[in-house]
Image (cartoon, rainbow, N blue to C red; front, side):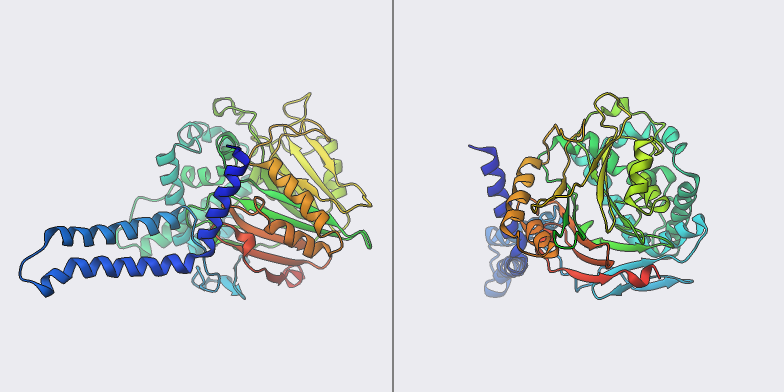
Length: 464
């Protein structure tokens, strides 16, 4: 059977489950009541205990609960964004609050350690949950190379900017202080190595997940032919473990707004007043035992770019002159402002393992996306290693752009990003951003995030 047909059939069935979450929740309740009824009815109706009937009832309840929890754990079930995942609270001037149904962690501290401490104290229960889920999946499924990468942590730490390390130290102290005050049983304090491993998940994904039949991140940049304005569409595709998508939040710092998850000091998607940046995992070229540890992890590098550059032209010039830090593993950094867009393909140049390929959005008369998936780019025009269903996603994007050629960029991106397999089981953040107006359109879920209605948020007051 054609593997493409097989993957589409699975996605269609997968999405059916996602779209019928309410039905599945109702069936869970029905089967639980049925099982309990069978288990206790024999005591009510007869003095003689019918053991097979009791066992049958118990089995139905256990089967119902295990099935539901597994569906939830692996991200099959949709979340309801109106049921807020975070408790609104504050610490000094720092707070977690909602605008509509979008959670925002506002950090007003300026000292790196205090920034981390406020983050850790306010987000501790959610970070602990995500760390435990990540560790569990890493051990059960043998993914992410936790054991191998742990040996390299002392060297990796040396190349993380000192202010980010101080922020991590503050995060850990905030988490441990929350744990000692709120947990019934105070567990051993969390360590820097444990939290640092969490920051390295995208880098470890380069070595592991790109060999698995998963969806992958998609970035599409559209230009309006009439006024040449730019609009960016972005999907973050990542195994949710039943929690990542539902705990999406905006982290508002002094100069940037990051769209990520609690506990992540580096950035996956980040916006400053003039520039939008996001990363894509790249298809593998390195083995875990051959990582050069004197380089900077990808999420920290993306944050560094957001804090030090305010235009595509300046970022492009720095890349071409080799003035940017070198990443720990190959990855794609996408950047766009209101005039242009580029993708920096770190460590992918054909004649240099450390070189960066710079791909620039060109002026086009036809409506076509400037697209980045997860392929390896040895040159500006060549791409290899078509993994994460990249070829299918590229074809779907091209077809949708042609279909909605007369629509606005916002409408065109919205329709395109909703299409399977661009929108898939691992899509947990769906973002459309207009850098001219600073309007952000966001939806999130533990899967198929683009199927949810957009929530619009103006970032104008964030940068005023």
